[in-house]
Image (cartoon, rainbow over all chains, first blue to last red; front, side, top):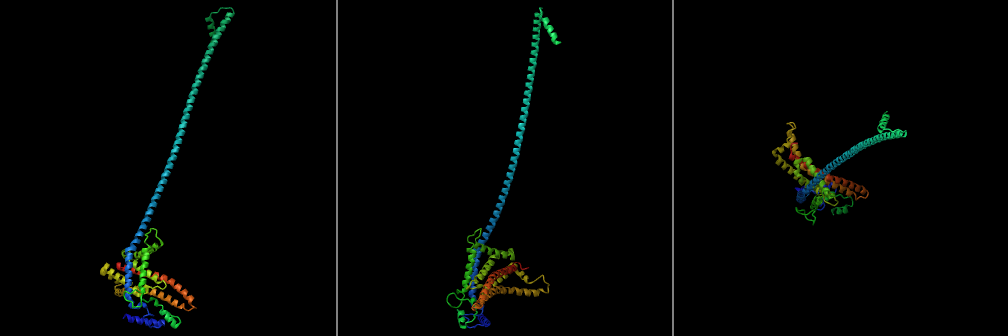
Length: 190
Length: 252
């Protein structure tokens, strides 16, 4: 049956193509696809090829590619996770830095404020001390002046009495010292 | 050799566009038996080697950052995997190795068939019919195994009016059994037609006047055939996925 179909088609095709339909064995002008005598051969080797391809793919190639793809996916997601981690660390570090900067600034401010206050108190204290010493010195000086003034008055009195006695003696009188000193005292009070 | 003999006889234009599809023994000139090594066998073997080269050798370094050859393998993997997942859903993923094998075989056989002087294995109905029948049988058996008799509910369109259902059932049944036919003829037909057309243009190149046009036409056709080679592999695979989806969830 196969042979009949083959030769019939072959002749038909040959007529269409305008070529001699002779010696089909060497130069088939029909469709070699319909030469069923070769089918067993083709089908046998096709099945061998398909089985080999299937075994190679399912045993070796596909698991390997699947593993590579999975590994790649894993690597990519790992890298992304690590990048995110690093980014988080960086932002934490930045925050820490900002905090440190703020602290340092605050501390510097506090220190300068303290120093300023200290200096101010020292200045005030020194001023007060100086004032006190000045006042003391002033008082001392005043008392010295008063003492000098008092001693000067005494000297004047003594000089006056001596002078009066001398005057009295010079005028030829003999004056009682007590009378003279009373008189000088009275005069000086007046 | 036949071409030359005929050409010498007539001296004019000789077209043998189908000669390229003849299955010949590689060694000697005897009949083609079941286990004879033929040109078809050779190119099937080369297809297998190409699959191994791309999918096994190319990915042998298992690099996180893929080399170019590894990228090709990964692209093919991702392409088919996504197709299976999109079309059949999560349930179909366990059939991914089968569909991947099918796709890699068809796409590489198509591309290898485009090499000048090569033999296009997928242009043969013997090959595509086996592929399509394998898909058809697998899907039908899977359908009954997964869904039992309710798999037949696929042919009984409950959303249609009751009177129409028997008619629709017959149409659905016919379309179901036509699937392997269209599935196989589409692939072999496309590949065969493209190769035959290129051969016909090549025949015209013997005429000095039209040979530049002929060569241009061959170039254009070749570009088109590269597209067709991929698109037909894609269509074959996605139709397989669609049929598989029917087997997994027949009530659409």
